[in-house]
Image (tube, rainbow, N blue to C red; front, side, top):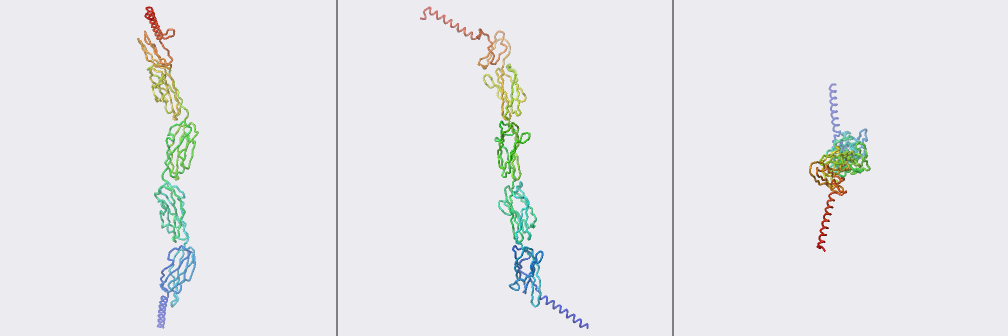
Length: 495
């Protein structure tokens, strides 16, 4: 009995080994080649061609296809044109799929095996290349380094690469590329050293299936230069000057390629506004009219499109159409070679100079040209010679308004001693030579250079003594001549 049991056990072992060998020989040991679609690939059409070859003959194959959520189709019989080449064409929606093939070999016994699992994605919709929130369209940058925000969205595939395109170099081409961009995640980049100018830029995105998209373009302005602005003189009255006009002309020199606006401001000196006007074009001259007599300040500001602004100096101008007040006084007569004081008064809120001059009242000849006065001193001295002086004082203000006033000062000589003196006096206004003579005890007490002093020598019957002497001499000569005539007549010398 024990021998029979051992024999039976041996027989069973042998049969098991034989069956294992048979099964192993019958099962397909298949190597797949020329696989379509290849593992981990993307297709941009709405169908897929399944194709493979095996290294041994197969009697039939079945395709099992799954998407992300559930089997899409299967099993499906595959066609073949030989026992080693099998294929199938399917219309598919956009999904990420995995697929495997069941292969049947009926040689001797019917056995089957499954291939490995393979993956592919159907994606025939282009991604969406998106411009980020910055910089916005028509953005104006005052810096040469500009930050950009861009992204690419794809609901099925991954993003293969994301590009920033621009014409910063003068040619429309990609500026930077991101080959590790993440789907629907912003890409932040900075482009350095953009030269001043107006540009366009956009985003290009490409997904793993080869689909691509270009965004719309945006405009970018780079302007790193502040506007250049200044007043033009003399078209604009110089700072601190005055004018007797009723207008103020503001004339500027302006250099700016990307001008946004220019603002002209006129204020009273106390800061209250008179006029403020803004222009969006390059207006280089403004005329403020019908202005009263005040002190004004004005300036001009220019701003460009990147909000860089520059302002002229603030000018002060005085509108003044009223002449200064000028008054002069002093004694009407003065002795020669003594100090004479001119007393004057000048009043004006914008005085810009006080002056005096001396001239000969009788001839108009200048005795002292215009000489500056201290406007607040109110007096000036000089030492007169023997003239009838015209003393003129005048003043001007910052607007060049002028007022002039004059007075006449007569001079006289005084002195004492013996003998006689003769003086050479100037003509007075009536053309009479004034002179004083004296005899006996000494010179007269005073000799005046005014136009109103009469001769101080003696008279007979109202006729000056010198004239009477001449008349007497004429009479004597006439009597002598008449006597000679009678004598000659008597002696008959004259027939």
